[in-house]
Length: 305
Length: 320
Image (tube, rainbow over all chains, first blue to last red; front, side):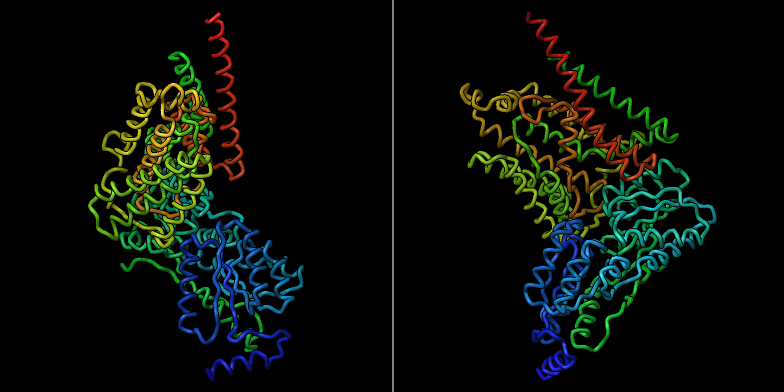
């Protein structure tokens, strides 16, 4: 109780022009909660709030489809209307969400950007600065690609399965894979999108395997697509001959990693990602820190052998 | 009737040959045994779902829930094998049972309150998807080899038991439609429900039957999908109902009901699958894939209306 009071005094002490709730109310606005990654993020956040119920209250909301921008804009507006102190958001689009976040910041609501980084030029043009708390997807993908590169020879042919091409994450991971393959001297013979989907990744991978009979590896921008690629490799009778890597470290790939059918993946600690954002937002609300970008860890996951 | 069906098969086969030729010219690796066996092993789920969709459309209804029901069935099957340790036949029965139950519910609600099936199955699309998320916690479930050999190519043949089963169901569906009493009732109800009722057919029972068949086949689609991909994705099959409808309409089945063929729907499925595989293999860009797929669907249907009008004229000249 004393702690809470102390925090409240800090909050008002820094001269916030708007009265803060006590304890602060934080809104976590996510992408699709039908997506495993965001479910893990949301669960991590809820567990953190339950353990710190004195420190803040939490409302978690997600949208129906990853591409449902207008619904996410509406969610931010609802959160503003409810007297939220801070919005921690994983934007469904790097540009489209900026205007509504500008409105929120004008109302002195603290905004913290997680997961998918808002577009720098758009932010600059709007004259605001939103701190980004999240992993470097490009570096993560480069790390996964480097783990794969140890098993490749120069000139080996590889293919990339891209996520939804307009998504910032998808672009960053593709760039990271390309960086690593360039360093390894591997030849990227195909890059196609499978929209983060297992079934489509299977169809596309099967086609890539037929078109490039000497393909050495498939780099999938998420594990869901890695599952589809691994199934295609098995169906083509090329297990062990064509290596597969993924990204996200979802539970369903653990067995495949043990079996060597997926060589490596990256863990962005989804369960802690939203928590990092929330803790950071709380610090800003209390006036303990000035908003700045903060990088969160990405770890390489590969079989112990 | 016989010659008209034959000319339709020939028309669809011509489209297929055209597509295969184009892709073979664009990629030296397309025209190979591996391409065709892989294709055969990719399509069982869409094939059986298209059989169900064909029957529903002919009866004058529509089933939008098949993609979600497929995902739900696959999810329960995966959980049944991995978490609940059910024997394979029991788990498969569960998947088919869930599909059947959703289909019966679709049919029952549609006839009981005379609500358009578009709305009822749209509701089921949401409910089944939600149930799939709930059951899996929105997480993919990996089953590995726990599904047996259903999706594994038969040695020497190259196609999987799932494909053989799906092809059998296509044949069975065609026999049901053109040789059985239920088939004639389905055609009659779809052509004119009121006239069918006056001639002593109970349209309600016919509708409930086709929705039950469609639901059960969506469940079977889930079984095939899981056997092939080795993991159940709760987001699987989003938009699959539209692929199924596209395949069925390419096959010449009327969206207005009363007319259609199961075998032609199967050819429609193959056309869509060849298109997807071919475009991926030649490395087509995303916009190209979408524009070409859309154009082929519309062109195939235009071709079909042309073929029909020729058929009608011929019929008229025979009558006169």
